[in-house]
Image (cartoon, rainbow, N blue to C red):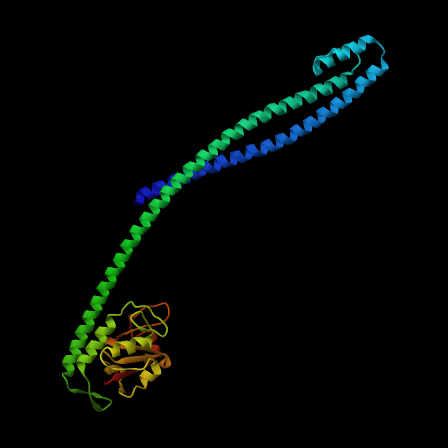
Length: 324
């Protein structure tokens, strides 16, 4: 299909070039017609002037020569050429007069002939332009159809590949999160764990559920104020996920930090399901293990997984563990 598209594109280029050449030639012929029309107007004006001059001289001849022969010469003429010849024979018209009239008549006839040729050329060129334009439209139409088909096929292939990659990534993330949650649950074993020198009872299965639920929403777009699968902001995602395991958190990062049933957790003791806070408590995510957390970053992004290193390490504030 790509080779056919390339051939059609080359054909379209050639058709367009032929159309442009034909169009330029037509414009040239049209300009020539305009010039010819102007020249014909000048010739007609000159001819009218020459006729007027000739008429005055004929009147002068008639009034100055009383001879009947001169009048017979004038009245017996069958054409302008004949008249000039007759007048020249009786020396009534000067050589300059006859030469002027002959030149004007010749000029006018040449212009008329040239105009006839130009009109024929204009008609032929107009037909050629129409043919070239039709060929160009035909090839352009075929090219547009093929391009549209190619784009749709390519777009569908890219969409399927992206969807497959997204599924594979999500599956891998879910598997890793499930494994990490299982390890955590095994380690906790229903007993307390030491946090900041104290012993706190932590339901390990709940942590596994929180991470697994959050992973289901990878790819959901960020929506400011959003707290549903149609769109999440950072605290909305945390609130929604924890609601699925029966914990009602407020929809505000500072309020989640201050949640009564939450305790602070050192960074080296983070467990999946802990809440991690950044940017002066302006952002929150859910820790999933292996130094990574899931969150809804900001406008224009989607729910995704990031590392606690890099930018987030510099903006890290602390972590809280929800006890129930």
